[in-house]
Structures are given as C-alpha cells and as structure tokens.
Amino acid sequence: MSEDLVADLQKEVENCINCGFCESVCPTYPASGYTMSKGARGRVDLGKSLLSDLIQNGRTTMDLSDSFYSCLDCFACVQVCPAGVNAGKVSHISREIIVSQKYTEMDNRKETANMIVSTTRKYHDPLGLNRKISGWAEGLTFSQRSTSLLYTGNMYQIMPYSKKLSEMSMRMGSRYTAILGRAISRRPSLIKATGLFYNREMAITMNSYLKYIADLLGKAGIEFRYMGEDEPYPGTFLYDLGYEEEFREYANQVADMFRKMGTEEIITVDPHTYDLLKNQYPVYVKNFDFKVTHYLDYMKKLKFRKVGGQVTMHEACHFSLREDPYNVPVDLVRSFSNLVLPSRSGKRTMCCGGPNDLIYPNLSEKISRERIQNLMETGSERIITACPICYANLGSEKSVVDISQFLHENVVR
Picture 1 (tube, rainbow, N blue to C red):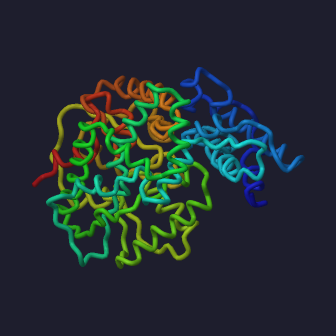
Picture 2 (picture 1 turned 45 degrees about the vertical axis):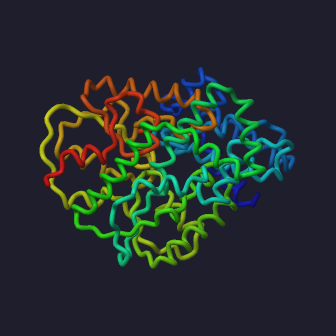
Picture 3 (picture 1 turned 30 degrees about the horizontal axis):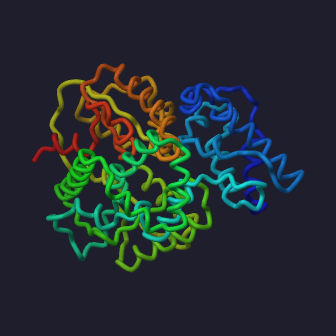
C-alpha cells in the first residue's frame, strides 16, 4: 500500500462530523436491518479505525470485508453530506487495502471476488463466455472501415448468467458459494460450466436490446465496428473490488486491443462502462486519448413520436450521482413523453442494489424490492432504465423496460 493510499483514506474520513445524514440515503443500511457496519456512516467510522491501526501498528487485525464489500459505490451519501465525505470512496480505498494483504493480519478477500478477477484476467470476460455472448449480433452488418467502435463491454450479455448464479447462491448459501469461488479461482477454466445456467428469457431480452441500440445508431446515420468474439469485458469488477494493479494491467491490455483496430471513438452502451472508460481508464492507461461517448448522445439526430400515458425512470447511479452527471437519458425520455420521476430521483436517486447481486444476493434483493416500490408509487405505466444491471435487478416488475426498447418503439421511421 502506498503512502498516497493512506493519505487518500485520511483525506476522505477526517472531515466526517458523524451527523448521520448519509444514512438517510444509504440503500444497504435499511436493507441490512440497520446494521451500523453496512451503512455509510458505519463504513466511514470503520475507515477511521482502519486508518488509526495502520498509522499506529502498520497492520490491522480488523475483519473489514463485509462492511466494505457490501458498499454499492452508488455515491448517494456524498450528495447529502455537509462535509463532502464519500463513504463509497472510503470503501473503495479500504478494499484496495484488503486486496493488498500486506497490511492485514488475515485474508479478508471474498472468494467470489477472487474468482471474478481470475477468470477476467484469463478470458477477458468474468464468465468466460465470449463466443456465446457475441451471438446477439448474428445477421447484422458492421462497417469494417469505421474508426468508431460499438463497445458493449459484454454488460448486457452477462446479466442472464450472473442473475442465475445469484439465484443459485441464495438457494445454496454463502458457504457453498465460497467453496465454488475458491475452486474456480484456482482453476479458472471451471467457470465455463456456469454457461450452462442462465435465465433464457432475460438472455433473449438483453440480445433484443443490443439489436435495438445498433438499429437506432444506424437510423441516426452512425457507422461503427464491432469486435464480436474478441470483445473484452472492460474490467469493471476488477476496479470496483479494489484490485488496482490487476485492473491497471488489464485496462492497458484492453486499450491495446482498441488501438490495434485503429479505434478513435468508443461508443458505450451502459453507465458502468461509460463511467469507467471516461473517468478511470485515463488514470490507469497512459495516453488513453480515445473519444468516449454513449449511444444516447446520437439519439438527438432522430425524431420520436409523442407518447401518451405516464412513464417514470430509474436513474442509474453511474449517470446521476457522479461528479459530472450524465442527464441525457432523462432529458431524452422527457422530450417526447409524460415523465414523472419518483421521490428518489436526480441527486437523490436510489441504487437498484445490482452491484451486490453476486456477493450479497439477499441484500441486493431487499434493495431492489424497495426501489421497485418507490418507482411504482408514481402510478406510471412503464418504468424505464438505461442500465443492464438495473434492468436485471428490477426486471421482476414486468413494467420495467430498457430505454433502447422505449426509443425503438417510438422512433419516427
């Protein structure tokens, strides 16, 4: 652990005045039964204790994992904190400390996290499914001359598999999940067996969403390439779980793949990949000078018919709660429909719980149920989301649709 990391932790926790405002918006706090260590303030308090241990002893004996790994990194806390403290950043820094192991007396890493890191590094995909999940593009024609790359990052495609794994984990319990994660960490090729288990209905739906995206871009006059079976996962889990050096190495590999194709623009399709490439890749990859856009940026080139009835929208955290908010999805839907936002919206939007789905499925489910209820209270006919993780976690409510479908249904042809 570098001195900079210690300084970063100190900078993030030292301004906390323990007012508790952050707990009023932290999704994991009520979902955990108001367990202090799984709330925003509790995580900052643990961060203070961790910092004290490291300064005084150089190591810590604290069991940190459940608190910091269960943080969703939604950044809702910092939106209401009068001192500007971000418990999400505290959790991220602390996960880096956990991963390093040099500064902990015990191995607090999660077996599922180790599994994801191992398989991602080996296959450029957390589930080793590259060939399977490029099938959505079958029959489509892409430009081989374009310097613009449609980059799905495999995010829509892996959701039917990760959702099924989450359901299996809930049924079998955390002990079984840890054993499975440990086995796959040692032999990453075992991950391919998970390809036999997936939500078929969701897979069909997710593939249709990607087709809608490609078709909408085509209607907007945008030419683009697609990497097919060679498309790598962006490494979101590596970064989120605190595997900094592994992420640095992996991100540089992905960037090299983009360069070899002669890519100048990367058109992303989901909030997590957009945020990662726009804000984190330039930090970890030297001369990451690609133009990073989102496909919705091009939808202003199209006309949409006015929609009757009321709709609401679940705003993704990685769009609405980041330092530089991306409000295009909301503005776009509002431009041709009667959009009524829920009480938790804008800078107070609530995470769907999806990032916890693989490691803490029970917690994730409780959060998603609360968010669905909040959205349904608007009385809207449809709930629109622009994130595949959010769709997968909220999709038990049949009125939830991806924004790509909503746009495709109403584009003026």
